[in-house]
Image (cartoon, rainbow, N blue to C red; front, side):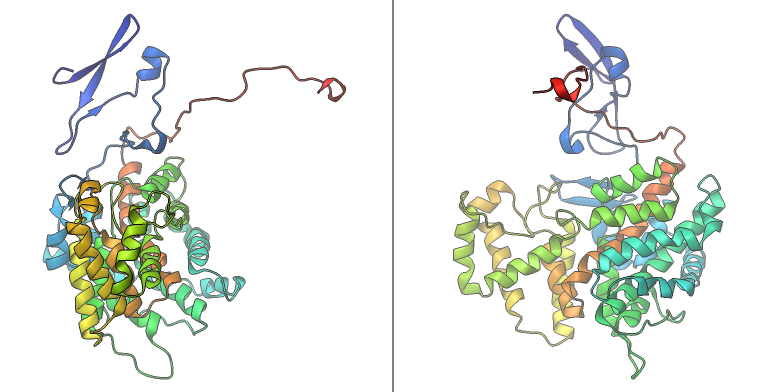
Length: 430
C-alpha cells in the first residue's frame, strides 16, 4: 500500500484502490468502485470494518478510550457545559457564543409543547403498554401534526424539524412515563431548564408542589450529554439508512427509537441493573465471577466491555462520579447494588482475566443505578436513552441530507441460496 492507494490482487489481476485519510483515526480503503472494477463485493457482517459514511460529528478511539463531540472530549463537555450547549455543538459544529446559546435555548424552550390533539393519541395504547412502544408510535405520529417541517429539501424546514425533535422529545418521554404509571400529564414550563423541565414533567402531580432538586437536575443533564451521540452505532445507522430514502425526519427518528429498543443496544443498562440485583450482595461476587469465567456457564457479566471501547469507557468515569453525587444527595449511603458495583469494578480493573480480555466497566454499568435512584422504573431506561440520543440522530440525519454525495443505502449480500431452477407443476414435485 502506497501513501494514497492500496493494491488488491486476485489471481493474476490487480487493482489500485484509493486510500482516504481522516482528520484523526485510521485511514479507509475506498471500495465504492470495487464491484465495477472487479465484479466482487466485500463481505463484512455487522459492518465492523466498513465506514458507511463520511462524518465530522463524533470520533471514538476505542483503544485509547476517547470520545470526542466535534473534537471536544466528552469529559470536558460533561464537566463544564450543559446538554443544550452540546446539542448546539453537535448540530452546528462549534460551541455557541453567549448570544447564540441564549437564542438556541429560547427556541428549544418555546417548542416543548406538543399539539393538544396528540394527548388523545396516547389513549389508543393499552394502559400497560411499554413506554418504548409508545415512543415509537408517538414520535412517528409527529409527522402527521407538523406538515410544515417535513420537506427535507428546505434548509429552513430541516432546522425547524431539528429544533422540534430536540424540544418535544422530553415532553413525549414524560407523557409516556405518566401514561405508564397512570398519572395525569404535566405540561412543560418555560421557566425551567431542559433537564429540570423534564424531571418536573415526570414527577410533579397536580395535588402538591414539586420542586426540582438542582443536584438531580444536573445529574440528569449530564446523563443526556453522555448519551447524546456515539458515532455510527446501530440506531444512528438506522436513522441514516431511513433518511437516505428521503423519509421525513420524524419517521427517521422513530426508526432509530425502534432499533434502540433492542436489548443488545439500548437495554444494556437495564440488563446491568438486573445482574447486580441477581448477585445481591458483595459476598456472592466470587461465585458469579467464577461463573463468568466458565465458558460452559450461560451467565455473563453485563455492563462490562464494549463493542468499540477496548479501554475504559470515558463515559463510565463521569457516570460513576454522578452516581455517587445522586446517592449522596438522596441520602442513600448504603446501597447494596452500589456496593456490588464498586467491588465488581475493583475486580474487573485488577483481575488478570478481565484485564487480558479488556472487560472494563462501561457507562451502562453505572447509569442503571443512577436512573433507579432518580425514581425511574427500568422500563423507562431506554426511553431516556432515546431522549438524549435524539440530538445525535438529528445531527447525523442533517449531515447526511446535506451531503451532496449521499445516496440511498443499498447493502449487498453474499447469496448462498438455490441457483436458478425451473417451476414444476405440483403433480411432478417430489
